[in-house]
Amino acid sequence: MSSSSIWRNITNNWVVKVFSLLLAIAIYIIINYGVVDTREVEIPLNVIMPSEWVAISNVPESVTLIIKSDPQHSMFVDPADFEASADFSQVNQQGVSSAPVILNSDTNFKNMKLSFSTNPETIRIFFETKGSEGDQQ
Image: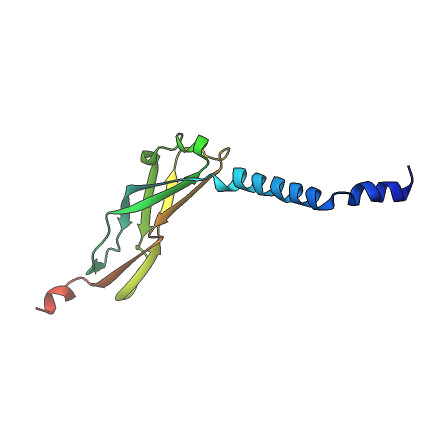
């Protein structure tokens, strides 16, 4: 086979070949990335408070756990396996402080395509020194 014959076979019906390639890529992307199951579940939030400060603003008691996974993996995730916490023990001044919500779980999800996040991802609380909240009245 000569090189011109090979080139002719490649360029023959090139529109159909390019369309087929793009269609195959689109199907691959839809199957692997388009089918994602998202679940949102309320879980309790453990807020670690500083000893010398008092929270003036509301302290949330729960956060929303957002679980994104393939549909075949979503049934293996039990929201009761998760603990959410926010640590404010290092607060050292009056005012608004923020802390990230940390997720912990004893279950191993390494072999599954899963993504976990919380809403909100950061907790903000206004702190004052103990005893100063009674001085304002």
